[in-house]
Image 1 (cartoon, rainbow, N blue to C red):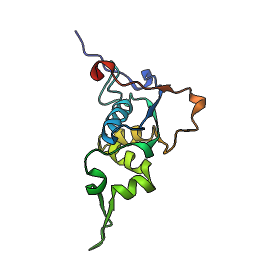
Image 2 (image 1 turned 90 degrees about the vertical axis):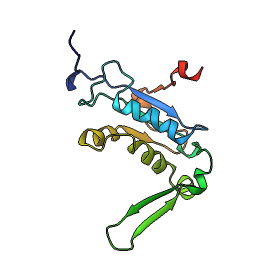
Image 3 (image 1 turned 60 degrees about the vertical axis):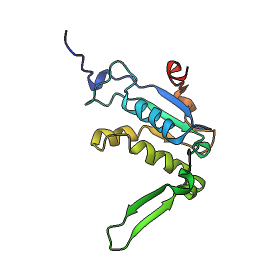
Image 4 (image 1 turned 45 degrees about the vertical axis):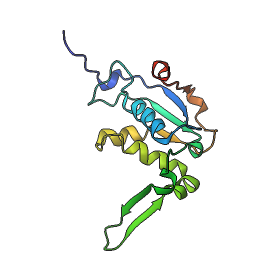
Length: 148
């Protein structure tokens, strides 16, 4: 029996909506990353961009469990001596909740050219409205067997 490898021209992309309201940020980011990579499809091929388009709404209503809201920080360095920039998640979730979701998903996607292409298909909105109605997105339901 031969292993099936999907070709780039055979990929069929769908549009999905994920509602992040009241859900942990990391759990939602895992679902988004799996859809972007195409890991939920039976035709998943690691070297082909076979994922779907994902719309995440209500990013501002995603929750951080435990004391992460007070203790978790995001670090970046400008390259100059002493220029370490630190932002706490309590400020990030109030000012730019889409960036918090983007950072979480970006850490779960491979850091390659393929991963950068996959991240372009992610659309984040802090509220419950989006401007992608023309694509007829479907509401993504998590695997019911895991929830039970």
